[in-house]
Amino acid sequence: MDQAPGPAKSLHDTILGEIEARILSGEWPPGHQVPSELELSESYGCSRMTVNKVMTQLAQAGLIRRRRRVGSVVLPQKDHVSILEIHDVRDDVEAAGGRYSHRILARDTQGLGAEEAARYGLAEGAAALRVLCLHRSDDRPFALEDRLIFLDSVPEAAGEPFAAAAPGLWLVDHVPWSAAENQIAAVAAGAEEAARLELAEGAPCLAISRRTWKQGAPVTAVRFLYPGGLHRLTARFTPRAGG
Image 1 (spheres, rainbow, N blue to C red):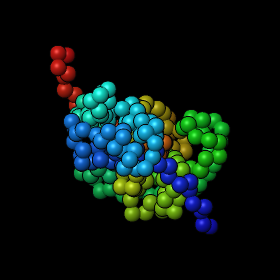
Image 2 (tube, helix red, strand yellow):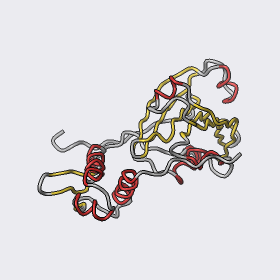
Image 3 (tube, helix red, strand yellow):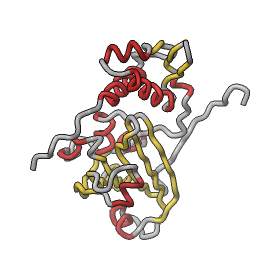
């Protein structure tokens, strides 16, 4: 069944996306002078108010610094400290010397209920693709992935079977994110989760929940469940000046 085309991209989102891409790709390196609001408004054929909103959003995201009468410059991204990098499960398996494979256990499109939609800042009934994926190392369960992909942000995911690449890797290749959040918890495996991971019910597991956004719009929300003894988190830190 053909899907109706999504809403047209606004000029605001177009300008934001293009400037963001230039910064994150390194085309505009740290210290680069961003064109003035007047120059950008003339270039895109829009009002200065539209450009001003874009610049405000970029500044709030830490991508640029705005100074009155001086203009805006690109900030060095090394100033942003990432506690945990986003790794693909395949990389984790192969780094440990395992042979990686994955299997899609369930896949369905649904409209979000009021409570779930509010949790993600979306309207009730917003379309989301839920995917349940089992990641394996040498044919043994390595991680269970339960993911929501928000189709307003990633409409092309609706027809993707995720056969060649698991959902996380597919998203990295198709939808560059601009913000992410990780939450980590020690949990006991429920009966269904334990069966899929070939564990005893109640076995200790590590749960990593992650959400990503692009230009303020939610892209995906995922929960990875790892058997407690099969996953290790490492974070490396360097001291701040004077710290």
